[in-house]
Image 1 (cartoon, rainbow, N blue to C red):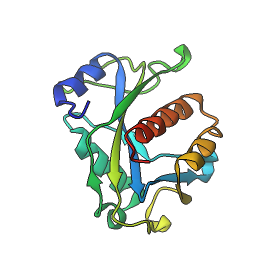
Image 2 (cartoon, rainbow, N blue to C red):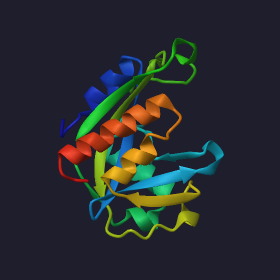
Image 3 (cartoon, rainbow, N blue to C red):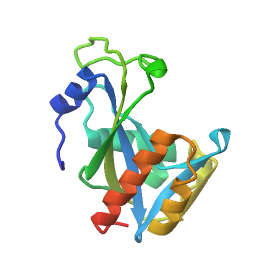
Length: 172
């Protein structure tokens, strides 16, 4: 799954899924979790892939938006190492806008997440430059424990899958 083309990403949109990246930010065999007080949620940073944008472009744009340019400028971007699909409950399907690269509107049924490892050059994140309220660097066991406390079932499922893939590839 190392390379995903723009055509493949647009095909995902045509299926009604919003393509997303999950930033698996790593340093010394630890992974970065960020916390948003408003949602009482520890999570991996993530965000949508815009139309006609590669996964790598989306990863840098989203992580820079969420974590600040000072922190992300040291990142080494890896290849996609896995993915997960989340289908929304019926009552949430179509609740958000989605369109293909040629502008065709699609009924949004869920999301397709791509896991991308990003090696951080340092661990020093200035939280004031981020969209978040706190952060932690966690080893695999700590990351599993905090993930099991995520109250959003889909986010928990996707995060557990990302951690499992990272572990199998000896990145975490």
